[in-house]
Image (cartoon, rainbow, N blue to C red; front, side, top):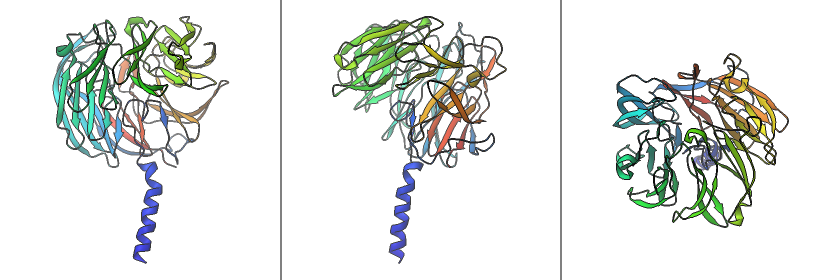
Length: 442
């Protein structure tokens, strides 16, 4: 009888575990696709219905939390000298420590904290930008001043460290290094910038350079992603001069298509759907087709303020019926026709609220699709978690609740510009003061 009960218990654990063990181990989730596959999740709720499981103090950072193996990783900046001020065109000097925290996802208990002193000289100096990437026993972070660091998951001890400024002789971009490390096979790929070093791959175990590719005056602020073309794993790199496809193993440039982002603000990850790829930056957007041909065609390109969607802080979501994204100039969430770039609908209040003032810019919301239900979670710059349906015709909201305060500032507004993580049946959100865990299980 005892053995029977034990077997039944193991069966229950096996059935429940896929929900509880759902990881968000890197920027935009498991495949950098902004999809959350967990079953048993609330997809409608009343304001106040969602319950906070725990909160924990942290310091400054735009870096998104990552979750793997029952642990949450938060990358922040502790100022020891100077005062952080936000000025879009003027760098600020600070002294402090970039720190990585490992936290028990279930309880909020800090397991370890490791860091290193880093002097900042960037605009918007409120901490690191890139999300940690966890693969196996290692975790990879890229700091604001170009420090690519590999640490052990078990205790946070440093395995290797490469500083881009010292190794490649480049300058930190005005808004800091923002590329979240991409692990492909035995390599870690990052946007570096410079002559012949726009994209660089490193051995993930040792930090030794494996290959370098392309040239760019600056790295931009996008994170590389992977895609498979004719059975070959490739790296998609969006940089200030265009979008490029590289052989992941060798770094060979397979093709590059020009697209010009204002102020080097290539930020959003290019989105692929079947044979098409949508690329959007500040002031220009385009659609590519026939990706498997080896020479994709630009089917349309827009730079009109009345067409397409030009994304800044957040990456759009691409479906066969519509592209959903946050427009940098209008601060509107909008749907765009993938075939023509025509705008289908627009909504200002979803991102910035009703009191944002006249003509707000850089309105931000992070879009994640819950694949079992087909609904979307949007985490806006006010710290609201919204669940909704989005179609070509309209957006329909099924729940909205503020889960964290907008502790930062931008363009005279209180904002939180940090992507949350969806894992363990919860959402993990952070600002410049704390990280919170909110239960989303039914």
